[in-house]
Image 1 (cartoon, rainbow, N blue to C red):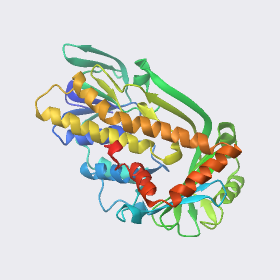
Image 2: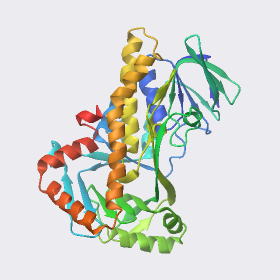
Image 3: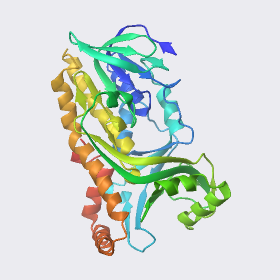
Image 4: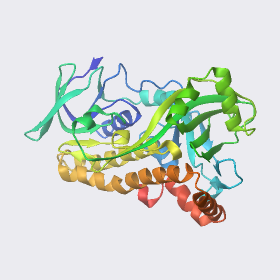
Length: 392
């Protein structure tokens, strides 16, 4: 599909997933001309069965871009329960500690995509990708696989974890392989989830239950050693359901799998610098992290929020928005949040996915300290919600 009227755009965004489209919506509503290039047949594609857990800050950014309103079918996260395996060691996070506001919202990807489609105000090329880009005379020249040549002041890469554009740049990256895979599916269940998210930290990886709209549906994120995760994914549905029922215990009552069962390999990938001359990289293309805390998407949305804020500021001043100092300012604003969350998630997974007796005693003692300290809980909750000073 080609739907363009120009060979020049202020910004060209590579990637038509949620971060790329959200960035395009934010910029285009600030009178900045935008083109989105997506290699699949449509933007916001592949959402069937996917579920997003938005932090409080992510919801605020979506509201600022007019893609969130009270009509969205979402489940608030009012409580979070953390367990060390099947032990009695636990931490309970309650919304009353943060001004009685939900700590997050769980939404089906197709639901948020429906609202985003209503706000499209930019040009799109689908079934195409960037083959080559050069910088000359104050412009980036992009050569697309469909044969089109586009000029722009700034390229934003939002292609995701396996970005070809990022890989072509040979940027310095910190990589870490967890040797784990995470299984994702949705279920219906007998008992109401009471707007409670649950995470069990097990030896092979965390097991999470996210409450979905309506009270009697939830999304599962089940981490195991990668080979084991693949075996579990391919079990007959009856055997898979039986195993999953055991993992869920009796909290939800009888369960039924209602979606496709997917399995993804986990790894961390963190760029040391997220920009080069006239190009900046955001979202999973810049920082893919462990799903242990459900923060990957939220980091990307915070990237978008800061990028739009800074690009709008300099565009209003009539500045060339692809200048190095502008991209450096975006990088500086996002550095601490992205780096800290990447290593915190890696550290949490490593500490809890360990059968060491010493670590077991230490982490359970730490959980007891957190459980007894409202102040510590507030600090941790604020960061997870994206409203701490680090996130801004």
